Structure formats: C-alpha cells, structure tokens
Length: 250
Ligand code: PGA
Image (tube, rainbow, N blue to C red):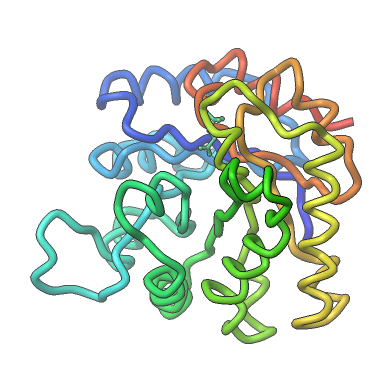
C-alpha cells in the first residue's frame, strides 16, 4: 500500500556508540504516526540498533545483502543473517553499490529474488548519471534498470517493494533534482509500471526520491503528487535535520 516514507541511509558512517547516540535522539522525538520511518546503520550495528528500537516505530533496515543464501563469499552478509537480527527490509541497487562494487542489473535481479524468497521487503534504487540526463536518455536508462533488475517479479510481490529514484548526479553533491524533475520521473515510473503490470500496482507502489534531500527542500519535493517520501543520506546523520525531513509532508 502506498505510504509516506522517510528512510535514512547512513552508509559507512557511525560506529556503535555514535549509532546508539543517534538512535536515542530519534527515540526522544515526537514522530508523526502516518509516516513510516526507517534507518539503515552499518551491518556491525544492526543487531544493537534493532534491540534499541524494539517495539519502537522507527524500523531498522539494511544497506545491502548478498544474492546467495550462504557459502564461501568472504565479507558478505546473507538475507537469513539479516532476518536473524530482526531486519526485514533491505536497500538494493544503491548507485554506490552499482558504481563501486560492480552491481549490475543482472546481479540485482538475483538479489531481488533472494530477498523475496526470504520474505524481505526491498527498497530498490535506480537513477541516471549526469551524462544520461544531459543526453536526454534518462527515461530510457531508468526504464532499463527497472526492466532488467525488477520487472521479472510477480504482481503479488509488488507489495514487498518500495522504489527509490535517485539521480546519481544529485547524490551527495548538494545538487538536487528540481521538484518538477522528480515529479516527471516519478510519473514516468508509474506509467511504466502500468504498462508492464497494472494501474492498480502503479498506484499502490511507494516511490521515494533520493539525492541531496535536506530540510530546506524536502517540503517542496514531498508535495509532488507522485513522490511518497525520501531516501536520505547526509541529512539523516543529524537527528534535527532528519526530523525536519520527517515532518516535511503537508
Ligand atoms: P544524499 O544521499 O542525501 O547524501 O545525497 C542519498 C542517498 O545516497 O541515498
């Protein structure tokens, strides 16, 4: 079901005590009932984060996972391992994973399957590079990422998927897509979903925007009809700015 969502992707920031401190600050705040709030700490801090937030509305999610169930994959973490520490949602396909760890659409489609087999919810990230946008290819690039990474799933499984459109040129750069650019792409994503699946699915999937969302631009971005919230990097590392973003829905 379509929902307002704000998810903080902490990336490789915050050790155990910093994680605990930030979670304690979030726990002390009044949080809006209607917004789903998630945080993605580093693997090493997931279990303690889960324990700290047990029965609290802020959900602990993971930044990534491996596509295999288990085995000789040094340094990797499986879906079952995440499930065993209370994590039920995983971010897949973040542009940093695609760019620095060679995750292509084919690997991502395997990760999607593994997550679903393990009854996990997925935040599936995708988005074009600056060169794609300059060349006017951004719609084609996004469509291909969705078709090759995600559109093999059954209609039934869409209830376990949240989409996150993150134009690469806007991530960590301070440069945001304009609210209109975000709206245009989100609308295109719903049309593409409608063509490949059904209008009902297109209307029920939550689509987040990510890329330099800050307290001073969140309200306008979130006010767009096809934007259901945000995946937040830098601004999620400070409880005050994260709270302002959480409270930026009209
Ligand atoms: P940013 O990161 O908010 O720091 O641009 C967003 C993301 O990578 O999800």
